[in-house]
Image (cartoon, rainbow, N blue to C red; front, side, top):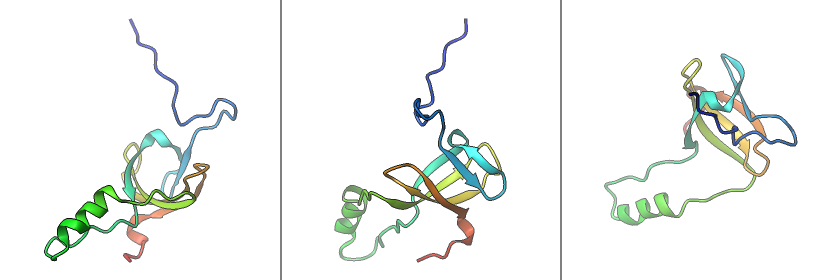
Length: 107
């Protein structure tokens, strides 16, 4: 007997469209082909400083949750296996831009 699948939670029933991410190599693909890695602007605190404990506490527990455009890292698991930096509006989930992560300058 075959089990039923739950509907994709990223789809909206009233619009009938799913979140799609534009891959620089593969073109526009469904969200289910990607794995979310996290905030693209995050930098790990230096462990050897005097403030290391408080810096790590702030980095793990006191992170910002911005409303609006936000840069994220995504891995194309079911495609070309590239790391992609995506700019997404967190209020609407609209994808504003995407580029290969290796082409991004480290700030």
